[in-house]
Image (cartoon, rainbow, N blue to C red; front, top):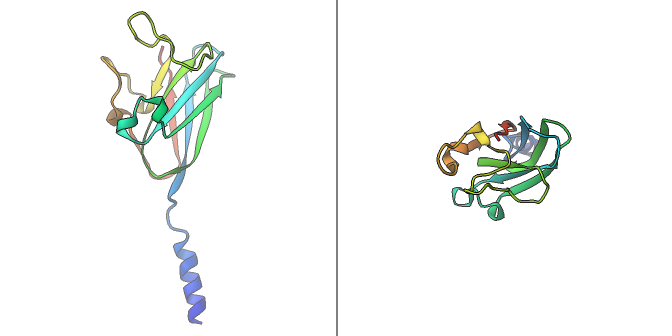
Length: 139
């Protein structure tokens, strides 16, 4: 009988809150139905805005003015998302003559930096369960 109680207890403890979750990203306000969205998920302040040091990344082909992507099985924690609309599908963010992005961008929490790049703390969110993040592209 003791064995049955132990098995039941272990079974119940196995249903604690998950240690991983999904992040569903809904991208809105895409200016032109062409190209791709290049999305980057960061989990460290020191890596933020360095695509080569991303936690996860995704390239989503644009087929409408809104797109959806799901980062699956992500460990719970703190994250920030950046993206840009790669209109010409060259795999990089194009910039104008003074270095500002010439393609649409978006950041988690829909922050819009006014001077300089965004800060990780402003774009960061807590992932404690499955989450939907809406990102509005700004041109």
